[in-house]
Amino acid sequence: MKRLGCADIREGDSESEVELFGWVNRRRDHGGLIFLDLRDSTGIVQVVIDPNVDGGAHIMAEQVRPEWVIGIKGVVRLRPEGSANDELPTGKVEIHCSQIEILNPAKTPPFAINEDSEVDEYLTMRYRPLYLRRTRMIENFRLRHKVVKFIRDFFDRQDFLEIETPILIKATPEGARDYLVPSRVHPGSFYALPQSPQQLKQLLMVAGFERYFQIARCFRDEDLRADRQPEFTQLDVELSFVDTEDILNLMEQLFAELVAYLKPDSVPVKRFRRMTYHEAMSTYGTDKPDLRYDIPLSDVTHQLAGTEFKVFNQIIAGGGIVKAIVAPGCGDYNRRNIDELNDLVKQYGAGGVVPVGFISDGPFNDATIEEVRSPVSKHLGPETINQLKETLQASSTDLILMVAGSTDIVNAALSGLREEFGKRLGLWSDQQLEFVLVTDFPLLQWDQDRARWESVNHPFTAATDETLALLDTDPGAVVSKGYDLVLNGVEIAGGSIRIHTRELQEKILLLLGHEAEQAEEQFGHLMGMFDYGAPPHGGFACGIDRLVMILAGENTIREVIAFPKTQTGADIFFGAPSIVDKGQLDELNIATRVPEV
View 1 (cartoon, rainbow, N blue to C red):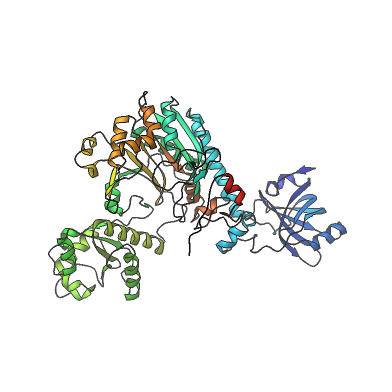
View 2: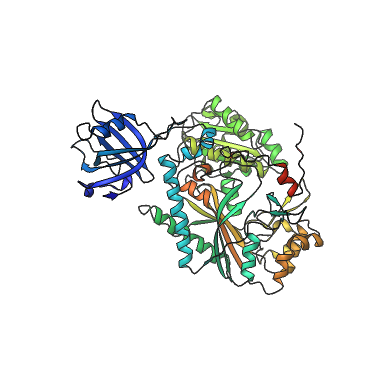
């Protein structure tokens, strides 16, 4: 007798006796014949119970309900003509049951498992194992397994070594807050959970492991969002004796081959589009541009300078800019629609949007200016409006939207508008995969609140040879050897060429506000090893959760993580974090204080 998965049965198994185990997905009683859809991790197959074949099996089938765990024995038969289900891999066959064993009855679940209906997020967390039974969730984790296996096989073929690094390490400032673990043996001292293996992989380069990778668990105590969790998984890669181009080529090869493996029918892509940080910010308002649709930002400051519109004049005179996007086919937007857009851009600090629509095509003059649908048409004048229309290549069915203000606010607001129209107009699909490599990030940025420089990436990133000397005179103009890989508007990977000399590392740490003694205390273990011959090296890390989320067409990484946390970092299923026994705290020499509400 064959023991098969439910979805493994095909026409070639006809007349074979099989034994199957799984959950009852659906039960249908046709007044004699009972049909069960039996489900396991492989999929679903239809089971037919005929009272004329085995009365005992039929009595058992009358009892069972969805999500009961059963075992069945029976014979594989082809479905009667006209009854095949083309939506199922097993849709041409059915099992004619001769025996049923009830292995475990089940309560009625708090939500439907046999359909992909919307479920309150609390319930998906509270009853997580039940939610994971859904076919879509099983497919997500099958995809995740394939992604991770492909990555491991890829790097094995490239002669990389997979090396595990410690989970309990020293707390060092790398950007996010650390999760701390108290030491029982060393009272008052703490380990930190690694935000990433960044320093560890650099030390492996010092050790002479020239090609390293790891599927690493990482931990960051930071505010959560749809694509962020306190614990996550990343691919970590580091190589010695390489430059930026070597790493970019490796990233292209890895992800192009991964997509070809997962989607063999897709159009092969071997070279990803590349753009500098400056180009991305200028054209798309973000360093994570979504290239599935073409709505660029255009700087129209020059065309609008000197018009009669005082708001624009004042902003431009104060050093601000004006940029515009064209919303295709939205020329008929009414006041309510524009108010919605105003509310959106105000979230980014902008004062509002200035819309310009058209009743007809062709150039405008004083006599036809009434055909321009805009509250500022008379302030701008026909000449400026004609210039805008020509520059932006807008038609009578389009809507021009302008935002004025500081560069940061304008870019953020229009980037948000651009994303909103991408969704509203359905300009992209989950099946599209558009990669872009963004390079030449600033090395440092000025933190106005703390009055000090901050690393754009992390403090171990090297500067380009051409701008390195500017560290002494104009740190904000220094360009890093950093790079990000963006997929569909989401940063899925990033890295850099690293600093590999003590002198430069100390200089960067001093610029970031670390006193010499403090830098030695926090990073001396790394810089000390640089004194013994550290090779030039670089690498990248890729967020596995984010990557699988996009490949699966999901909107949140919680759908590709087995037991995720909520937006507040809570695990509803296990009830974590939780209060621990006072004896455990005493053993760790810890006293707790609950803040007053």
